[in-house]
Length: 324
Image (cartoon, rainbow, N blue to C red; front, side, top):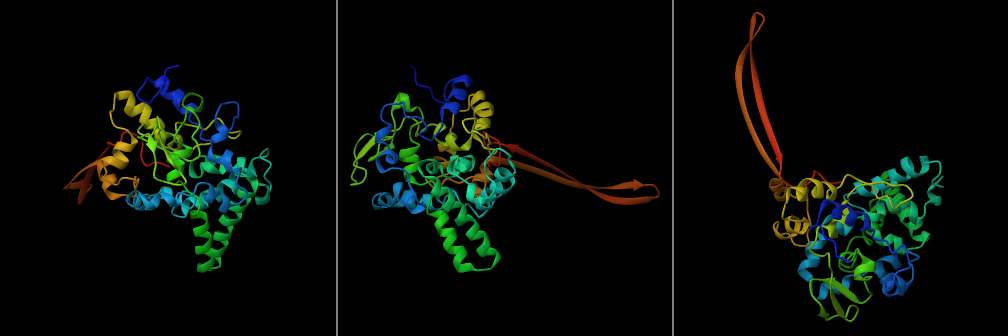
């Protein structure tokens, strides 16, 4: 079978998007038993989930990349700027609780599968946890919200840090989500970091390096930044994300750069992957032209001054903006 990449046809790109499901749902394939979650068992608490994908050992040799990543919104993917946390609660209240067949009548009914519409991107490793983690996550979200209402800054900060303890970190990109076509390229193995090289890795926890077939491809980012509705869920949902428009508008016109080129290499931000929050990225993404002039206009018997401002904005990002 020929491997597919985002460099292929639009039909191939569509197939890529459909197959890019980060959860290890099926167990028919060979090698899923060697994954991190299979080796450790599903997490029962948020602390266990954080430990399962603990990337603190990466700092010893990759301090610069770690520091860059900590400045990225990925390092607080559940909390975000606070807006993400609030939106997840809105999803519970105005989504799950109002959907007659969701099984969610109150916060206590929320399970892992209920949260995957959000967690698919904001916390994909939640699929590697028991429902007790979903409950703890919900309690922490509302604990933070209640503390804000009471102006209890100490408790709010404590809840915020707990939410930030689970996020998109090194191991999500360089292990868990480093392979999309698992029946073709194998399941990501515990003890292995995936990137552009193969061989020994100077780490007790991760003694091996292996090549990820997608690490330099846009589909690595497309797993979370969307092609369209995530139809693998019982309740399909999708935020407005960039990967679909990147494929149909940019790659369809033979665009040559990918997500990593613009958001990591050309921006010189490395693992501090920024978008519209960074002024330099915004300046590169949008070409802005404006001109203004004034004149006098006869309005009946009166002469009135008027001003005209012409504004032209050209999207040079290669996809719709903003994302999310």
